[in-house]
Amino acid sequence: MRRASIGFLVVVLPFLTLTEAPGQPAKDAGDKEVQKARLQTLYKAYQAYEVSKGKPAKKVDDLALEPAVIKEIKQRFNLDELGLSLVDAKKEDLAKLVMVYEKVAPKDGGQILFYDGSVKTLTAKEVNKLVGKK
Image (tube, rainbow, N blue to C red; front, side):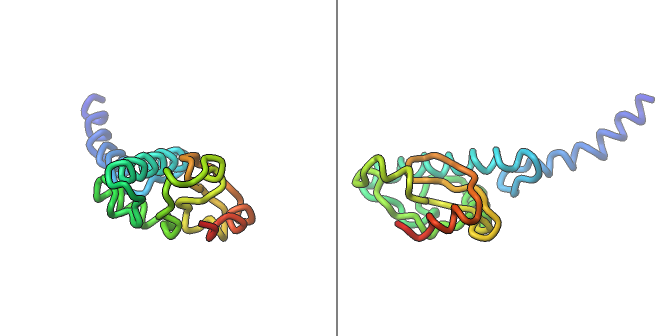
């Protein structure tokens, strides 16, 4: 019995490790929460960049993020809206301006990061009303 348990762990453990590997796209039920955390990390890095450089980042590669995280963000999210100053904008406007959104969001709906740091899941119709309004 003990030998079967060890054999099971030897087979299953590598698969569990692969599904949790950093830099790998997240899957299934926890996917939304993992991506939300990624977007919040992106926002904090964006804020830090503007504070340290005195200007907003124009591309995600400029941010102090791990290369694997940058790669995942580029694969999953549209970053065309980057470049707005958090310092110069009116605070009430930041909550209405899209910073980053899932590439599938204009068609299927998805997660959106706004310039105030909030992350929301919107329908495709809602996304299309907001993107491209920097």
